[in-house]
Image 1 (cartoon, helix red, strand yellow):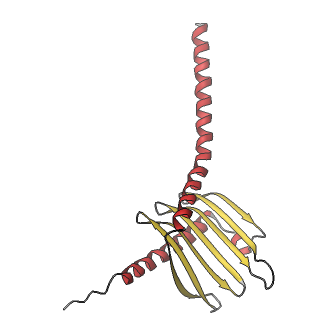
Image 2 (cartoon, rainbow, N blue to C red; image 1 turned 180 degrees about the vertical axis):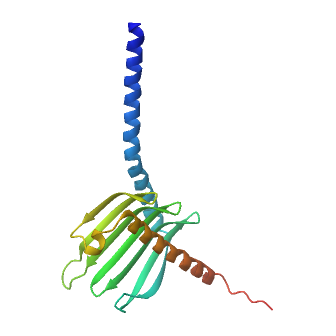
Image 3 (tube, rainbow, N blue to C red; image 1 turned 30 degrees about the vertical axis):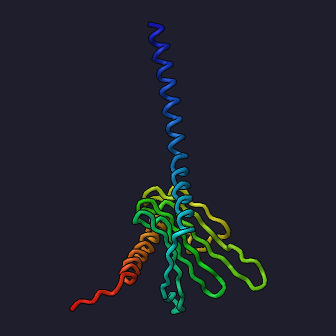
Amino acid sequence: MKGGLIRLGLLLFFAGNFWCDELLAQRSDWRSRIDEVVQRADSISLISQQTFHLHKFLSDDQPIRETWHYTVSEGRVVIFEVHYFVDTIEYLEVYYLDRDQVVCTEQYVIEYPALQDDRIKWGAVGFFQGPSIRQFVTMGPVPDAFSRLSSYDLWSRFKTRYKELTAQRTLQEKNTKGAIFAP
């Protein structure tokens, strides 16, 4: 009887250790997976990036020209970025995707002062697991508009930008096909 209890205790001890190891591995696994997606997207984008421009207006009717860069692998977008200038400030958004779902987003506000090096005034990196933000890291003083953002706000921002990209890709790919003349 005593030997059976010892074996049961050892079995529970090893099962508990295995379960804890699995939990820790899963916790770091999401970071490793995102890191792999980001590295792959970055390397592919160095050789096959597409670019287009959209002209828009800010809320105060100031015109801006957004520059979009995106990279497709196996028919799916793996990374896209949007940037535009307002005076001497650049706004940059980068989205890394895995199977059409955002896994990492970066946002920066960069100042280009005359006769000095450029500098990041504010930046943020968000890591997603599904529509929920897993981790959100900021640098610099967070602007009021971003201090109140929720996971849903960041997810919605991605969905809006991705919808714009999808519409523009459809137009761009349609325009690159040769003209078809029918009698």
